Image (tube, rainbow, N blue to C red):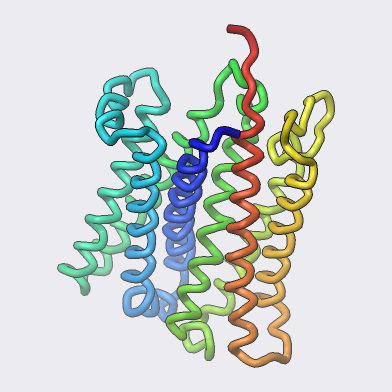
Length: 287
């Protein structure tokens, strides 16, 4: 993989993390009155701000990849046929909607219906951005990317990164211990979504660095250990989160919190390894 692809990796991961935070917040917003009270009083602002910061960093990395910010303007000129143009547009739309939501939270703090409407607008923009990111790589000249599993990888990546970070923010805000808001059930739901996202990756060895039938993978030059490391990191991070959510071992609260923080760190490293393998797997057929 070329060294100039690293900004692209971090752009993608940061964008997925920002989207995942919003997806997690939307899941939590489906709870009862006590959970909604928690959201409006403690969770809305930090999650929205973290998502905004992640998107701001993602845009900076995208400029590093493009080489010049002016190229992004030219890329928008081909929206009718270019997924690159659509991706850039959706990044801008998602960032703008997040900014608008942050302003609404400040100016209309008691308008809960408006806040919820803005949240689901953010969810829609985030989903469109993730979709456009995945479709950008589904090109006929690269058969290893041109399949539905690419969509699964990008969507599951946003959940694998966003949900553990979201739970980390909940822990930092002292809204899980003790559970006065009915958050335990939702933390288990979110952990289960992470597990499902990880399991959804397993059938797609073709794009995760592990050999698949007649695939010619892993690609030449990509160490097999990279694929093994990918699965080890993701599986360990997922297991730690499940232990925290369901086992609640007889441990001190601060040690249980480490399970969530370690889970996010391991899943992040796993996603970096996965994206490295993904971009290393690029090859063309034809001219």
